[in-house]
Amino acid sequence: MARIFILFLLFLTTALGAQTIEGLVLNAEDKSPVPYANISVSKTGIGTVSRFNGKFQLNVSSRPEGKDSLEFSAIGFQTKKIRISDSMDTIFVFLHPNSVKLNSVLVSPKSPEEYIQMAIEKIPQNYISTPFNGHIYQRTLIRLNGKFIESTESILKGYIMPVIGTPGDSTRIEMLAFKSFDEEEMAIQSIVSKRRKKKGDKMAIKGLDSTMLGFGKEMSEGFDIYTQIDSNLIKQLYLNGAQIEKIKFWFEDLVQDGERQIIKIGFKGRIGGVASQRGYLLLDYETLAIEAFTFQVRSSSMKIRLLMKVLGINFNGFDIVFNFNSIYSEAGWIPDLMSADIFIDLERIKLLSKNIPVKIELNTHIRFLDIETPAGDKCQDGRLLKKKTPLRDQYPSDPQNPLWEKYKAQISEAGN
Image 1: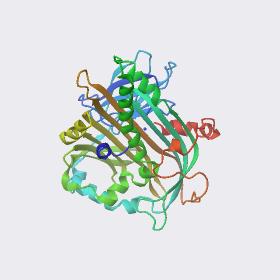
Image 2: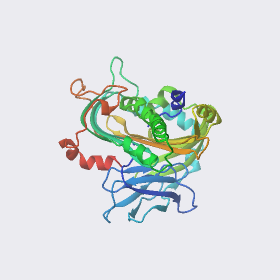
Image 3: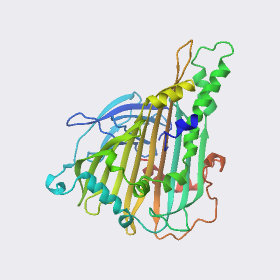
Image 4: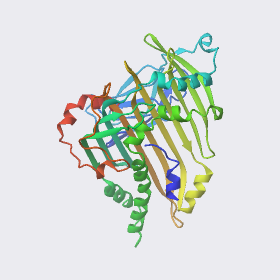
C-alpha cells in the first residue's frame, strides 16, 4: 500500500545547513502572495522557491559572514536583495511589479486555451530537433523533521534526446564527479531523543521513523536523472497534451523582457479526485515557445487519508512545486532547468500518547551548465549512469575531484 501512496507523489533538490529562514513573499502593491518566486543565497548553490501561498523555507549551510544576502526574483517583479543576519528567522518580503499589464487588443482574437494549444503544436518547430551534448549539475536533498539527512551532487555529461525523440537512439548520461553525505541514523536518533523513552519503546520508535523515511528514499530513487530529463514537462505536454477541457486558463500579464514580450497564462484544475493543480506558463509572444512552466500539486484527499490510516499514519497533505525553464539557442529552444520541491506532512498514530509528526521534504535540481549542438559525443564510454539505481550505490563520494573547482562559478549560478 505504501507504493500506492507513493504514486501520488510524482517527481523530486534545495539547501543544506544549520540556519533556517522562513518567510512570505508578497506583492508590494496589493499584498497578495507571490507564488514560485526564486529565492537564493548569493554566491552559493543554495536556493528554493516560494509555494503557491508565497511561503518559503530555506536552510543556509552556515552562519552568514555578514556579506551574504538573499536574492528574491519572480517573473513580472523587480529583483530584491536582503542582507542575511544571525537573528533572521521569519521575514516578509515585498516585491514591486515591473510587468506591463496584458493589453486586451493583443490577445482578444484568441483565448488562453488557444494560445496553449498552439504552443503545444509548435513544440517540434520551436525546440531543438537533434541530439545535443551538455554538462549538467544535479542536486538532490532529503530532510526529515527539519534535519537534512541526505545530499547528493553530481557533475554529468549528457547525450540528450530532443523533445520529439530520435528513433533507435536514447539519452545517455556519464558521471564526471559525485559527492554525497548521509546522516539518516543521526537524524532518526535526534528525533528519538526528544521523546519520552518508555521501556522497550525506543527501538520501536526508531524502526517507525526508518519506515517513514523510506517514503522519501523511494521517491528520490523512483525518478532518476534519466526520468527527469527524458520526461520533462515540455515532453509531457507534447506527448499527452494539456487536457484543456479539464483545466481553467486565464491571461495574467504581458511581461516586457527587453525587446521581447512574454505572455503569462495562469491555470488551475483537478487531478482525478485526489489533488488540485495550479500554476502558470510563460510563452514567447512571437514564436509561442514555452519559456517556463511552473505548477503546484496539492492534496489532503480523503481517499489518501483512509489509505494511510490503514498503515497507522495520519496524512495531513502533500505539496509539490515543479519548475521547468528553457533557453534559446541557434538550434532551437533547449531545456535548461528542471526542479521540484516536495513537502509531505504525516503523523505516526499513537493510541495512548501524542501522535509523532513526520515531515519529509525533498528537493531536486537539474540544470545545464553548457550546451553543445550538434552532439559531438554520444557518451558511449566512461562511467555511464544506470537507470533506476541510486547514485550513491553507483559511485563513491569524491569531493576532492578537481571538476568541482573548475565548475564552481557555474554551479553557484546554476544552484540559484
